[in-house]
Image 1 (tube, rainbow, N blue to C red):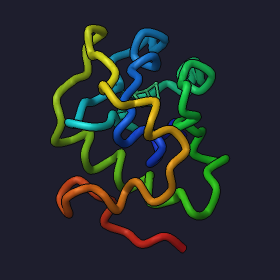
Image 2 (image 1 turned 135 degrees about the vertical axis):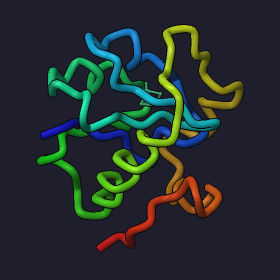
Image 3 (image 1 turned 90 degrees about the vertical axis):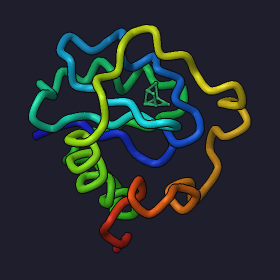
Length: 116
Ligand code: F3S
């Protein structure tokens, strides 16, 4: 099992999660992070750390967020390791809780599976 970042991270990237991760599982995109499922040890520390409630254990993902599984696994293979000096985006607070944030991403950075 793994934990996964979901679309509530997009345009926020608060980056609190990174400092609570005991292994190097976060990867950094321009406006979000993802978790490498091959590295995640399922400690769950990042879940409480995220101000946007963007991280879920795989087995607790709501159906509408299931595209996050493919999204995290694919982009973790493409994006660089996230370091602890990642800064939140300037307008992060304005994006908290907004719907349909995945739709704002370019095709190559968006989930490639549809919501159920
Ligand atoms: Fe994103 Fe939350 Fe981490 S907004 S960068 S998953 S603290």
